[in-house]
Image 1 (cartoon, helix red, strand yellow):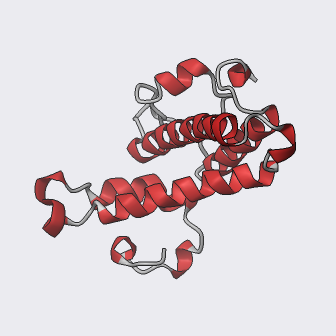
Image 2 (cartoon, rainbow, N blue to C red; image 1 turned 45 degrees about the vertical axis):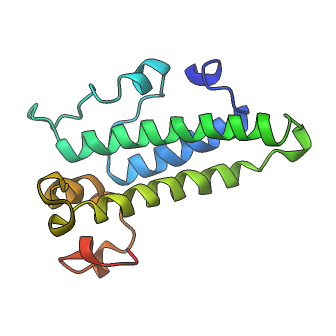
Image 3 (spheres, rainbow, N blue to C red; image 1 turned 90 degrees about the horizontal axis):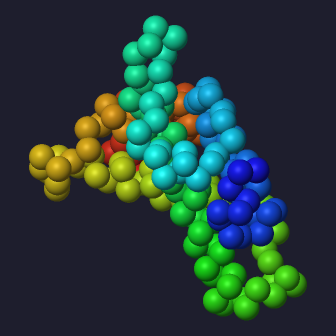
Length: 156
Protein backbone atom coordinates (compact mmCIF):
# COMPACT_ATOMS: atom_id res chain seq x y z
CA UNK A 1 0.00 0.00 0.00
CA UNK A 2 1.32 3.43 -0.91
CA UNK A 3 0.46 5.03 2.43
CA UNK A 4 2.47 2.58 4.52
CA UNK A 5 5.44 4.90 4.88
CA UNK A 6 3.44 8.09 5.16
CA UNK A 7 0.89 7.19 7.84
CA UNK A 8 2.77 5.80 10.83
CA UNK A 9 0.31 3.37 12.43
CA UNK A 10 0.62 -0.37 12.43
CA UNK A 11 0.17 -2.11 9.12
CA UNK A 12 -2.83 -4.11 10.37
CA UNK A 13 -4.57 -1.00 11.69
CA UNK A 14 -4.03 0.89 8.44
CA UNK A 15 -5.36 -2.01 6.40
CA UNK A 16 -8.41 -2.37 8.63
CA UNK A 17 -9.17 1.36 8.43
CA UNK A 18 -8.86 1.53 4.65
CA UNK A 19 -10.83 -1.71 4.28
CA UNK A 20 -13.70 -0.19 6.30
CA UNK A 21 -13.61 2.94 4.12
CA UNK A 22 -13.63 0.73 1.03
CA UNK A 23 -16.70 -1.16 2.32
CA UNK A 24 -18.58 2.13 2.71
CA UNK A 25 -17.46 3.21 -0.76
CA UNK A 26 -18.77 0.00 -2.28
CA UNK A 27 -22.22 0.64 -0.77
CA UNK A 28 -22.39 3.77 -2.92
CA UNK A 29 -20.76 2.06 -5.95
CA UNK A 30 -17.87 4.50 -5.99
CA UNK A 31 -14.79 3.55 -8.00
CA UNK A 32 -11.96 2.31 -5.81
CA UNK A 33 -8.34 3.30 -6.12
CA UNK A 34 -5.72 2.50 -3.51
CA UNK A 35 -5.33 5.66 -1.40
CA UNK A 36 -2.08 7.55 -1.71
CA UNK A 37 -0.77 10.53 0.21
CA UNK A 38 -1.51 12.70 -2.83
CA UNK A 39 -5.13 11.56 -2.93
CA UNK A 40 -5.57 12.30 0.76
CA UNK A 41 -4.01 15.76 0.49
CA UNK A 42 -5.92 16.58 -2.70
CA UNK A 43 -9.18 14.90 -1.73
CA UNK A 44 -11.18 18.10 -2.29
CA UNK A 45 -10.03 18.38 -5.89
CA UNK A 46 -10.98 14.91 -7.16
CA UNK A 47 -14.49 14.53 -8.59
CA UNK A 48 -16.56 11.43 -9.21
CA UNK A 49 -18.22 11.67 -12.60
CA UNK A 50 -21.20 9.92 -14.15
CA UNK A 51 -20.85 8.04 -17.41
CA UNK A 52 -21.97 11.14 -19.31
CA UNK A 53 -19.18 13.18 -17.69
CA UNK A 54 -21.26 15.19 -15.24
CA UNK A 55 -19.80 15.47 -11.74
CA UNK A 56 -21.70 13.65 -9.00
CA UNK A 57 -21.67 16.07 -6.09
CA UNK A 58 -22.83 13.64 -3.40
CA UNK A 59 -20.46 10.86 -4.44
CA UNK A 60 -17.52 13.26 -4.67
CA UNK A 61 -18.34 14.64 -1.25
CA UNK A 62 -18.59 11.16 0.28
CA UNK A 63 -15.23 10.19 -1.23
CA UNK A 64 -13.65 13.31 0.26
CA UNK A 65 -15.16 12.56 3.66
CA UNK A 66 -14.01 8.93 3.56
CA UNK A 67 -10.44 9.82 2.62
CA UNK A 68 -10.05 12.63 5.12
CA UNK A 69 -11.81 10.93 8.05
CA UNK A 70 -9.93 7.66 7.59
CA UNK A 71 -6.53 9.33 7.24
CA UNK A 72 -7.24 11.49 10.30
CA UNK A 73 -8.27 8.47 12.33
CA UNK A 74 -5.08 6.59 11.36
CA UNK A 75 -3.03 9.61 12.41
CA UNK A 76 -4.90 9.89 15.74
CA UNK A 77 -4.45 6.20 16.42
CA UNK A 78 -0.73 6.48 15.81
CA UNK A 79 -0.49 9.39 18.27
CA UNK A 80 -2.56 7.58 20.87
CA UNK A 81 -0.46 4.46 20.55
CA UNK A 82 2.85 6.33 20.75
CA UNK A 83 1.88 8.61 23.64
CA UNK A 84 -0.44 6.50 25.79
CA UNK A 85 0.81 3.02 25.09
CA UNK A 86 4.50 3.79 24.54
CA UNK A 87 4.51 1.70 21.35
CA UNK A 88 4.07 -1.48 23.37
CA UNK A 89 3.21 -4.18 20.81
CA UNK A 90 1.24 -6.10 23.43
CA UNK A 91 -1.21 -3.21 23.83
CA UNK A 92 -2.16 -2.91 20.16
CA UNK A 93 -5.91 -3.07 19.60
CA UNK A 94 -7.14 -5.69 17.14
CA UNK A 95 -7.91 -4.60 13.57
CA UNK A 96 -11.63 -4.99 14.26
CA UNK A 97 -11.36 -2.15 16.78
CA UNK A 98 -9.97 0.12 14.07
CA UNK A 99 -12.86 -0.80 11.77
CA UNK A 100 -15.32 0.11 14.53
CA UNK A 101 -13.56 3.43 15.05
CA UNK A 102 -13.80 4.27 11.35
CA UNK A 103 -17.52 3.50 11.29
CA UNK A 104 -18.08 5.43 14.54
CA UNK A 105 -16.23 8.40 13.06
CA UNK A 106 -18.40 8.32 9.94
CA UNK A 107 -21.56 8.01 12.04
CA UNK A 108 -20.49 11.03 14.08
CA UNK A 109 -19.92 12.96 10.86
CA UNK A 110 -23.37 11.98 9.60
CA UNK A 111 -25.00 13.10 12.86
CA UNK A 112 -23.14 16.42 12.72
CA UNK A 113 -24.28 17.01 9.14
CA UNK A 114 -27.85 16.12 10.03
CA UNK A 115 -27.79 18.74 12.78
CA UNK A 116 -26.14 21.26 10.48
CA UNK A 117 -29.14 21.20 8.12
CA UNK A 118 -31.24 23.07 10.72
CA UNK A 119 -32.11 26.37 9.02
CA UNK A 120 -33.64 27.82 12.19
CA UNK A 121 -30.43 27.39 14.15
CA UNK A 122 -27.85 28.06 11.44
CA UNK A 123 -29.72 30.27 8.98
CA UNK A 124 -27.71 30.88 5.79
CA UNK A 125 -24.84 28.75 7.10
CA UNK A 126 -26.99 25.60 7.30
CA UNK A 127 -26.06 22.73 5.01
CA UNK A 128 -28.55 22.07 2.26
CA UNK A 129 -30.59 18.97 2.97
CA UNK A 130 -30.35 17.74 -0.62
CA UNK A 131 -26.53 17.83 -0.48
CA UNK A 132 -26.49 15.79 2.74
CA UNK A 133 -29.00 13.33 1.28
CA UNK A 134 -27.00 12.97 -1.94
CA UNK A 135 -23.87 12.31 0.10
CA UNK A 136 -25.18 9.75 2.59
CA UNK A 137 -28.28 8.13 1.08
CA UNK A 138 -26.54 5.19 -0.57
CA UNK A 139 -24.66 4.16 2.57
CA UNK A 140 -27.41 4.38 5.19
CA UNK A 141 -28.50 1.17 6.87
CA UNK A 142 -32.22 0.34 6.69
CA UNK A 143 -32.95 3.04 4.10
CA UNK A 144 -36.31 1.46 3.36
CA UNK A 145 -37.42 2.14 6.95
CA UNK A 146 -36.52 5.84 6.94
CA UNK A 147 -39.14 8.52 6.64
CA UNK A 148 -38.99 11.36 4.13
CA UNK A 149 -37.66 13.76 6.78
CA UNK A 150 -34.94 11.41 8.08
CA UNK A 151 -32.52 14.32 8.47
CA UNK A 152 -34.62 15.66 11.32
CA UNK A 153 -35.02 12.29 13.02
CA UNK A 154 -32.86 11.28 15.93
CA UNK A 155 -31.50 7.79 15.95
CA UNK A 156 -30.73 7.33 12.25
